[in-house]
Image 1 (tube, rainbow, N blue to C red):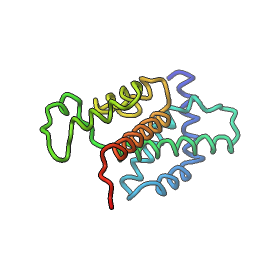
Image 2: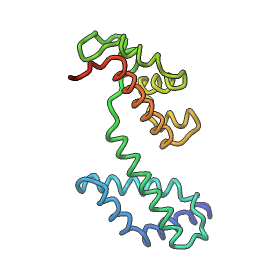
Image 3: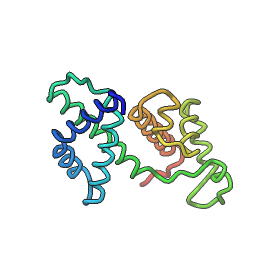
Length: 170
């Protein structure tokens, strides 16, 4: 084991020793049930190991606590959106889907055509099954920014639909 790996292991062990209860408490407040709490703690521990090099070794305990809290919030956020992601269907499968009352391909095509080219590209990538994290990496942005863009596009599609196609209620 190299000196760098040994140092990283020591820092990791020290963080778990000093903040382990805080990590467990935080995760239990943001998870449903023991099983999910354990999985969330594991996700935080993996993220902690992966991001440990970003933490300045000279940080004060307060700075470490802030850094760790930010890391844990990001892990919870990512996990929440992973769990809530709608099932995606590749575009070639969408093209083969039968027309039905629940799915109107012409309507969808018309709505997407009203978007800007950049927005159309993002929607196409989402239909192809890319996750927001993968899309963020492809577009050199953060996952949070990508989620915000997708949310705005979804709201824009909803507004266009309501203005053009929704039947007014008396």
